[in-house]
Image 1 (cartoon, rainbow, N blue to C red):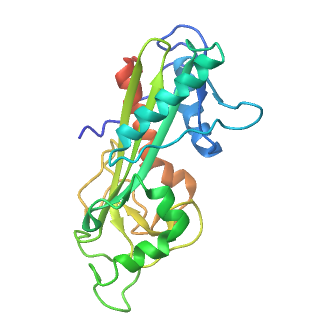
Image 2 (cartoon, rainbow, N blue to C red):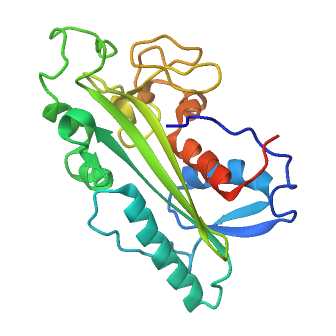
Length: 248
């Protein structure tokens, strides 16, 4: 897996040579802000895709792959644009999930449903007894993290009016023994990312890196630190590479 993080290109002078509208089909304003930061310098003016003030509803397929889900979301997004007479306009969709090795990749593509039903506390119950050192061990101690290893994955898809480009981003790590409330959302309170090298590439679990949460889950660190590990950011950078944007 290529973990390279692409540098930002010169603002407003990206691969198109002009500012072009890009509709992002998401209800998450945090995702919208991240996409604006990364794709804005490439000449895209990223806006939330709304119809009558609402994000268009799309049906997610029953699939085991985020790529399959992203492709289906894109198909429906393009159909909606075409029905509005705007089929040549650029649109962005994204899907992400948490994959836990000892649970066979669960919750994976069903992460949103799992979060809404069993929550992160349910994940901790499913992993009870796995990788635990002692009953009173700090939540940040996981040994090698092998049995509780997991990763966040994101798939971003962009239709540029002619073809669809895809980018995949990963954030490897492990599941904590206990939740740490605070910042973030979703499964952030129980996910501890692997440390990063100075170039942004992740190290093996347990190795000390230049960028670290000091063994804390995302819920226990500031948002600016969490963004260094962002699987969504990596997916967008991979998307840039797929489009063929020059790097600075």
